[in-house]
Image 1 (cartoon, helix red, strand yellow):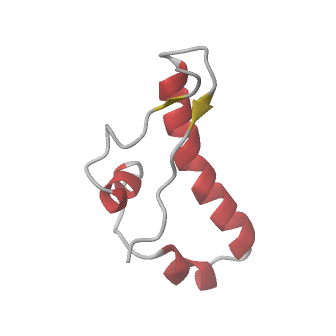
Image 2: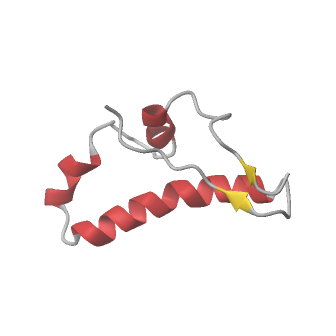
Amino acid sequence: MDVVTDGEQRRDNYASFVGGLLDNCQLILLTDLLPLVDDPEQFQKEMQSLFAVHELQFARTLTDKPIKVRCPGPIC
């Protein structure tokens, strides 16, 4: 195996995966929050980095090989 991924194995679904990482979370669209913050671009970068780092840290405990982190995308 050349690249290891945590994939979707520990998630029940995309929306609750994201919400489950945050305390006191109400699931709403990120696009609904952007108008409420001072720097929407920075806020979006910070939110995206939280999720990827969590899975990277877990996968890193399992291997020294390259790791691919899967990030949730839009839900239609």
